[in-house]
Image (cartoon, rainbow, N blue to C red):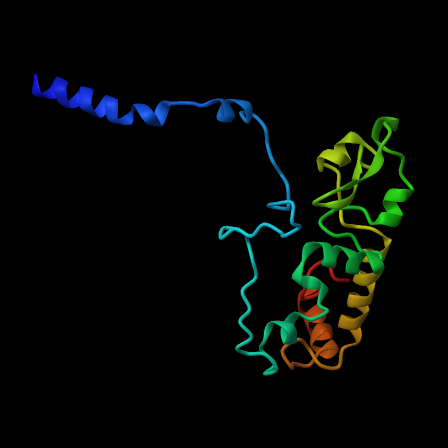
Length: 190
């Protein structure tokens, strides 16, 4: 008897948690993405928004945020991809914009650019790759002509270096290694 009475009191107390009014039913399944909280043009600020905390304690010392990262592309993936694309190098197996412009869209399907409110100018459509396997990532590679040239420069630098990596002999040490073992110290480097 005491248990059933306690259960009925608990059920009556929590019944309001299950009540639904018309406004919640109308907004069910709708997503609001607005960047403005009210019509006044003030941007919405929430406590759980991701933000960079830089209090300026080390400003001007050489260790502050601006001192370390100002103008450095490696702070973001997009910046790094753009910097490598200027040199003709691929980033994360993606073709450079010049290489992609030479390819037709996958299956000849149309694509278009659209200006989205939060993202900006965005291309919607199939990727510009040579096959569906490259689009999935199975045959994607970072090897292109620019990367091959960079490898050749590195090999030539290793062959002619006066000083080695750790301040050792350099090219003479490489020659001794080739004489002793028959292959270069870093296999695949020429």
